[in-house]
Length: 483
Image (cartoon, rainbow, N blue to C red; front, side):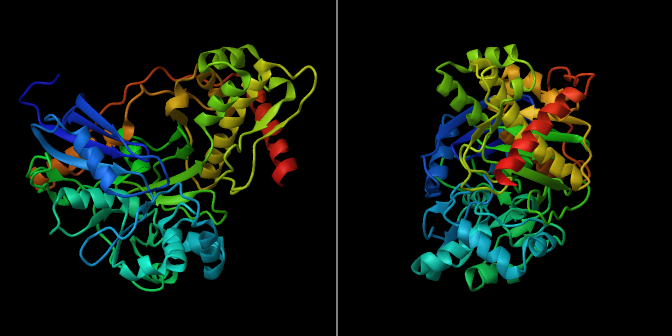
């Protein structure tokens, strides 16, 4: 517990599944207290559930003594409001795939993936807000007719915190995931929004990295009034802030989905569509690759073998690298990168010698990591430097993942201590904004230097051929199945 005289800030992570809130010391980043509450299941959710979860997570005086807060939210989701600020329909979340056809149509209409990459830095997929707008315009014209503005999940929460008379705001990081805000140009592409929806919509003001959005003003909510509200950002941008990423660091996050991302000095434009050219929350850029399959590859394999995750770890570590030629393409829920939405998982290289539980466990770990290593390679083709990999997310705690990762990635691997890095990043942004507000911008020129604790880096094996062989077998299996 920090001293009562410490300045406190709060960071909110409003994710797909839950709301997490961390209250931190503004100088050191030490977590003082925390709260959480769950969200309902589904890919289409009314935003009021996020507000109710925030109220539950901050109940009991969690925000007492806090001076500023920021919201990190799930990217891409679509919140449509009418002229009175009322929600038109349940928010479509990033993982709602009904707009896959709309995304394909939009890509073709503009002239292909390269045209989109040049225009906004990314090629739209079903997850992107622009695709969801097209879907609503075509399939729910009665809802489209009522809509006057469109917000992202973090935008909506930041707006609610400041009261109904405040104007909606966002930040460049989360805005860059809409498909109608250009990371290379730093502006909205109104023409692309109109192309998707058929007419213009009001969009939030894009704030600078440490610009205050306003102050809390929600009587009766339990949220203390007068707290400085920072711009907030998307969840991946928040995680990058929470991890205090430096050039050369590439984060590989192994949660329900998998991501590989890094801070970069320049905007990227991947015509292949594998790398999303996002902006970050500091004024730089955040090229990112996302896969649909990560930690659940391990839980599904453990279930298939009838064992728990600790036993899966032990089995994988008892097998040799390469699993005697057994390769798992881990597309258990289809796949986003590569863009194979109807693909299924494939197990190849089955021989009598290879067909053991240990080799299957090893193939699951290697397959999951090879899919992310392909993502890291895609980042490198965009000029992103790679010095080391930071492993985060639930599956990063696996002993087998930690041992196999340096083999597959071929660089040192650091496993930071488990933490709510999105909420921590949001709190760091709140501290940054508070300093800028109090000191006229002088002390807020850069975010506070909060240190991230972690174990020693795990070095790759001296013989790089081991990892190269595993990657080559995976690549050969992928080509055989999907070209």
